[in-house]
Amino acid sequence: MGRLFGTDGVRGVANADLTAEMALGLSVAAAHVLAEAGTFEGHRPTAVVGRDPRASGEFLEAAVVAGLASAGVDVLRVGVLPTPAVAYLTGALGADLGVMLSASHNAMPDNGIKFLARGGHKLDDELEERIEAVYEEHRRGEPWERPTGAGVGRVREYDEGFDKYIAHLVAVLPNRLDGLKIVLDEAHGAASRVSPEAFSRAGAEIITIGAEPDGLNINDGCGSTHLDLLKAAVVEHGAHFGIAHDGDADRCLAVDHTGEEVDGDQIMAVLALAMRERSALRSGTVVATVMSNLGFKLALEREGLKIVQTAVGDRYVLEEMKEHGYALGGEQSGHVIILDHATTGDGTLTGLMLAARVAETGRSLRELASVMERLPQVLINVPDVDRSRVKTSGELAAAVAEAEAELGSTGRVLLRSSGTEPLVRVMVEAADIDQARSVAGRLADVVKSALG
View 1 (cartoon, rainbow, N blue to C red):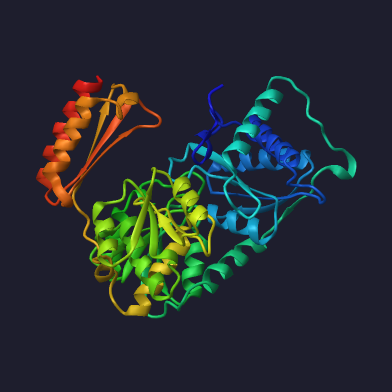
View 2: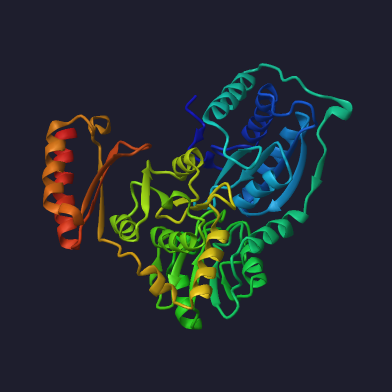
């Protein structure tokens, strides 16, 4: 069996790759593995279970709840809430385990299961591997040890989770949002109720789009992966700016009053300066991935701040932040982690903090975001090559060195093997788009000849 757990839980087409049987089995396995690890020792275990609005989430949630309860875990069902809300409630309620059913920004037919440890943090890789191994053992016929009588888990709805999470979001804001008109695109996803309520309680006037989930329309032409509707709505309504989330609302992208996109790098730059003013940016450092725009790095250096870069994936950003105590990190795609207030990327929190900065300074988002200039970036995927030799090919190394010398300090080259496909990604940044295209094209040709 191939590895089930990816960088963000188990994902696949619901009822094909990810079945009710798998959801139930993985949940029972998680309960047994955490019990063996001593997580439940000395008390009756509790889990928080939430989901996004996908139709398949209804039966998958039922399977997860059944699996946990059959293994002796009490379950608090919080219903449709964002991934960061489930993470927050797992920590705030002292639960031993959190489970979120979502495939984030993926299309509606997909779904996923993410397990969270006590405190709302991602499970360690070793625990995920053990859960997968135990699941496979029992899938092949090894019987479970099952509680009976009063030992089975009890299930109850926890509707209070909605208000508890929103109260947390509003409480951590440094100032109110009175006077701001903001368009919110909820991607017909998990934040469709949460985000408008939080922004309204914080004082903003809001216009919502993409906030009518029907189980089938999540991420469909809207949200952080499709910004055209938001851009048009911001201009039409004369709003100060717009905020877009993805299906499980762990991302946040923005649009300024002119309809121009403000990406995750720009959002982090704005928040970094705001946090420095409040002495909340520990070590004057922001954590980002190697895919962040060079303009972001240059902007931070100009402001006297440091950047630590990790491999692509918010899990690597979070690991670096936790290990060294950094307060802010994220990705260009809009996963922004504010570790003092969240254990994962939180799109609603990020949007609120961005709005608070606009309200506090009286400056437009466009002006605030101009602290960094996005350098032109060209990405070429080169398929059907031996990606394992990216770091060992002398011919490729020489071509990269030549390109870097040509670009100088105002450009950058990044060659990266895909983790899932037989291809190599060639990314080039330069002050001039034509130069970026030219260098990227030449490097892509070398990749084909050297690794083909």
